[in-house]
Length: 255
Length: 317
Ligand SMILES: Nc1ncnc2c1ncn2[C@@H]1O[C@H](COP(=O)(O)OP(=O)(O)OP(=O)(O)O)[C@@H](O)[C@H]1O
Ligand SMILES: [Mg+2]
Image (cartoon, rainbow over all chains, first blue to last red; front, side, top):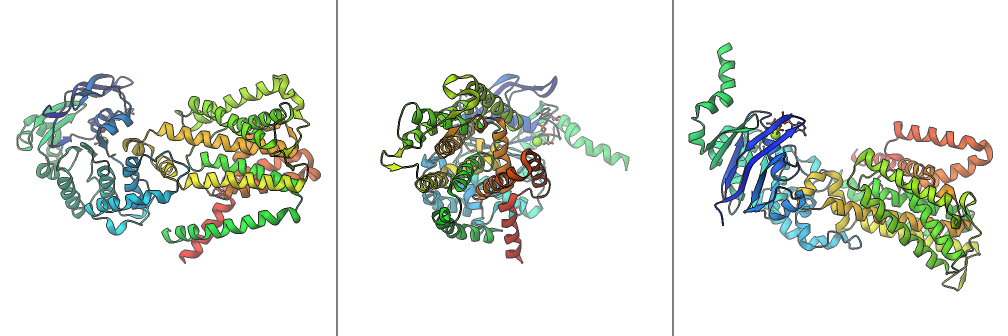
């Protein structure tokens, strides 16, 4: 087995002449928590969309566990064990919290096309679903309709639903976005916990989260990789400081 | 909301039981042919609602399934001399197969494109029915005998015919009800609520939509085939795009995505049509149009949807 679970070569995406992702060679090591950072509009979400096949690349290739998945359908890639979350909350709002997690588990029964079978047949999944909810501290919300949960809890539910598939690799797009510090701490602990035995690639704007969670960092600006390495190294890179932190310096100079 | 939802869930079997009893005694109070018309269109609208209300796909070609099944059933019974139940099953299967063809061609499109493709395909069906000699062209397929159910029960007796239609409706309705409350129905809900997320969880959404489409088409066909026996006629109006529009109106008026809404909507439209046809003649179409506009502008949840919302609000207080 290769040391890298995911590799891209020359990954490029153009939108009508605008290059959103340019010649990206990304390597994610098995077992790592790998951060993808960069200013707004750098192309981070587009990279996620390419990796999970929600968008076809203009050129370049993607290898997952050594297999070329560049032209695969998104659902096939998901079944390989690379499961993503979305930048905007990705729950099923009018299902209950328990039902949300069960959607993640349901394929294991092989009855997902059985329109003649009672919904009660899904109750065998409740035990496992409750375990997953407990692991993200949501057991008390099992019967709540998801839309009524606080935002931070919804992100935790997303993670529980993704965990239901026991994916080899999780892609999280800004899991702490819009959260207060208490929720952030909770989600960081959660990510650390679920990273055992799997690889995580996450987009994150909060640099303190990145610093204390991630093994390796890739910095993206205007679609290209600017720097890559461990946090300590990358955060001292002058190019990164200029592109990323630099904007703050300029603001400070005005005051 | 959760509490009132489970309140609805608990009240539903009672309500359905009451309606079942009403359905059993209704032909002694109301003209059976009128009731049969309501039940046929009610099933048609319920089938349509399975697709629009529970998958979020707006088909603008559902008349093709109603009509095709009606013609096939009529030809089987009149020209091939089979018993009525065979005619109904044959018509239903034909509609299901046609639904599969429509589905394969349209299912990867969404929104207006999906509606346009289904409309275009159903217009092709319309022209085939219009041109083909065996379907009777502009005259439609006339003089379809009701025959003997299983070769035994004489359906020219209106009461016997009514109970057959009632049974067919109950079976169709039960299939829809179960589908909504099945493992498959759970995935349909997930797809409607958040399609990209459903994909990312490993569900091949096109397949789920296709199966829902075929089910919806088959059940629309079941309604159409039964209707042909009731009126002993399959006519061009059944395959005309007006009919595809009318089922949208029935569903929206009754309450999109509600279990009973489409039946209520169908009953309302059918009653209005039969009341108004005698008094205002061709103004019926205008009045239907006005109702449609009012419904879309003011009562977006439809009759049943608005009622549910009222009860819910009362429950929260
Ligand atoms: N479907 C699309 N069509 C056209 N342009 C797009 C599309 N998706 C993204 N873009 C453009 O590509 C660029 C990168 O967008 P992307 O969403 O990947 O950025 P991001 O790094 O995720 O930003 P943020 O931090 O704000 O989430 C942006 O300029 C965006 O406008
Ligand atoms: Mg983004």
